[in-house]
Image (tube, rainbow, N blue to C red; front, side):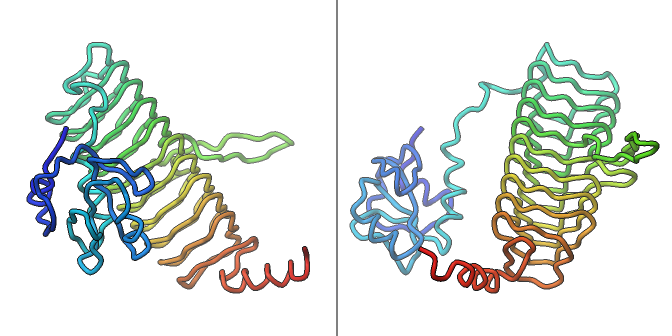
Length: 323
């Protein structure tokens, strides 16, 4: 699989400089330093390093071309790199199309045009699968689940009953959507299970990372907002609601009935208590603990949580004078 640099420039309507006949066989990072590949250089320091690399061509900012190399120009080189990289995506499972003979599909399920149902997939009653969805091997989709168009469900995922997925949702391997929330009531020294009767809704363009879990609501719904991206090994509890375009990084735990605003970022191993609300445009640094509402946008850190600038000053004072 190879493209001339000029062909890539035409496909993505990019201005270029240098030899358009260069054959590009793949994409790589600057540290990979592979010949016959395309990379990107997004800052002055990277531009200097790129000039001496073996890499054949770069996507660069129009104001900061890589000297001595062929350049494709875009104001956001890393973004354009992400788009061009799709040209070099390898086949994921051969010629994946149709319904595999080993799949078990209820006669009441509706499969959209050009959908793919892989080996050992189980699809329950009254399920609706949108057009061009790909359901990879060993996925279980229980009753009354609905998927929009162009969803990709990788192997070994489970979608419990009544789950609703929008368009272009991606579930990485091992994801569990709609498992029971952790709901128990204590009586006479024993823990009695509270039925979890709600559902999970994943809006358009949500991606959930490998082995992450999103629990169904107790009565209503757990909802993950449009464009939100969830990393691997994340736990989102029952009745959690996130806004749009949030980023939730690995090993985060979001407790029940927490509400996140739009564009919230929770870095690795952040945790919350239940029933807290986080405002729009909040970033919480790694291992931060959210114990009460965050009402103002900003960057926060620590446990208990403080504005990051205050937390850094406190840490510096705490360790001052220690060797």
